[in-house]
Image (cartoon, rainbow, N blue to C red):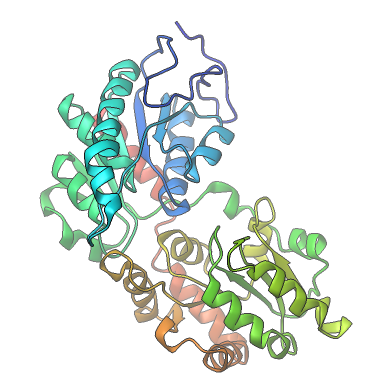
Length: 399
């Protein structure tokens, strides 16, 4: 039997080999886990689960995570000290693609079998699905084993995986009241979307020190998520010199080897006059720097995924959203418009994204610092600060 060893959150840490593939738990018997969390693929599906896990283990509740082999959760969850187990993943596409055949014939059945084996070994009292297609087989496996299931929907429009998973759920937690219409009302509870605790503790002074920022100039934070956003990178790079006449910029651009946006943006920076180049900071990713950047930012420019929108609302940050089109149910546009209607953001559709349109939007917002402050407060009014605790309460009630 595994002996408990404290991880970074005081949770039981699995020994080497416990990070299992489809075959199971690496050949050891594990102690029962009170809650198994399943989800990932993106930060928007991973961050809420980590925030809830931190609350649960603080209450003495043991947790483990089932995710994919290569999603963002495969890196972030073990780093947080939680036992992590990987299963095969498939995807249910709403369009014809040859990958559908392989997924439906091979990956989806393999994921379900692996999930059943893992749940039988881990013996949880509750399964918590945070979304993404890796969560669906775990939720179905939990239903087959007659386990209580909680599903959390982060976006304004429910994704396909959660629409299916909700059929097996005892409780369906939603971020926005508007999302409740997609689910049976009797099982819906509005909890909000948790924010990673470390993001609340950011210091403007930390960002000023790390990046050599001017403490007086407004800071624009441009982000496309972990992978970067090619259209945003290129449009902003084309106008960066004009923006830098009014502000300083931290640009998180990803490191896509096909688009080579990072190299192009760094070349743009190298061609700037030294005074302006000193104001422009290009980074492929942000990690420990992110809390300070959020604390210092006057304006955020980025996509409107669930994670980015939640972070801006929770932290009271005004944003110019450029939603990624074509996502399930056009969920990013729904996220962005929800905040826009509250007065907490501006929205520039990608179909209208040109360097000139982006420049006009950015300069109009920077010209009104009072408006930016009001937008931030309106965005904050949409957030539920204790979302992690509310979700933990839902789970512990079922326990």
